[in-house]
Length: 368
Image 1 (cartoon, rainbow, N blue to C red):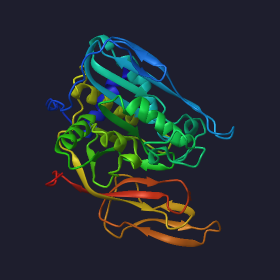
Image 2 (cartoon, one colour; image 1 turned 90 degrees about the vertical axis):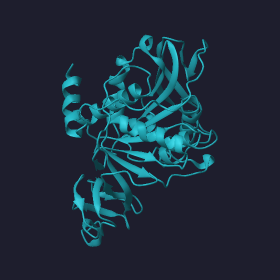
Image 3 (tube, helix red, strand yellow; image 1 turned 120 degrees about the horizontal axis):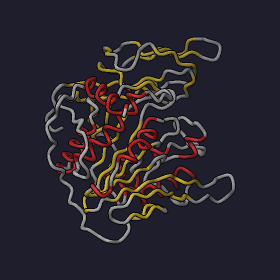
Image 4 (cartoon, rainbow, N blue to C red; image 1 turned 180 degrees about the vertical axis):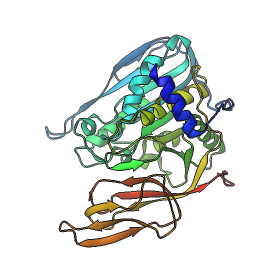
């Protein structure tokens, strides 16, 4: 298969080499149960792989329709962890959606100890509408967790995913890329909570995923009732979770898709669910401090930097002009570091992201 060649090329780029086996996962394995595991209409007994839908009901009127989220459940013949892989939270982020389509036929429940839940497209209304950031209701799905069954469409999607996917999972990977307007270098987010066991498990998942830049994130919400993000919702329920980024700008380049497929398999192998090739990072680059630079005004954006570029504090990131080309703002880097992503299309609205800058370190800082 051409996957093997592409994956080998990618692994060389990431300099993973022949990595040692990851430490054993810390999560307690659930007891074996002959009862089917149900995720929406997908009901899988031991040793079965099934597909189905999570049905999200409509709102109070016809202008707020429901939707159907495509899911697959590969349930192992033996008990083990339940890993949720969530793709397509944002409508213009295609790489993870394609990666899970490739991953599905590679899962063999008869050889598995545990379960993999694949959410193939978490936000169908945004996907089919080719929407950047926001759903038809004007909300960002990755900001409304744990959701609300009485809310608007995005709220209801989040509530359904929390109930059907996050709650039965023991581990979760939220798979992203740069949105349709963002050029992005591959990286993952590792959330540090202060819970040593949970933090260590999350760090090992991030290393197992194989993306060599890892953002240390200490700023996520602490309130389970206002968790906002997919991965944070899992973490606040005591489940190790990471967010991963590969690809961007509406592209489906082979390396970016393969990175997600290989990373998902890496975590599956790390958790002991199924034998799979390791892409574990040997020499990670830790992002010890980062900042998302937001637009100070609405206008037309012209970037002056590229993804993965190193910049000094105060360096010019880009310029904003108005509809007539009159200069509005010069936007500069708030800290020295690497450009993790940058918006590469002209239209921006006040308060939206323009770029993310991360300060890098070759060693994990104390307390990290």
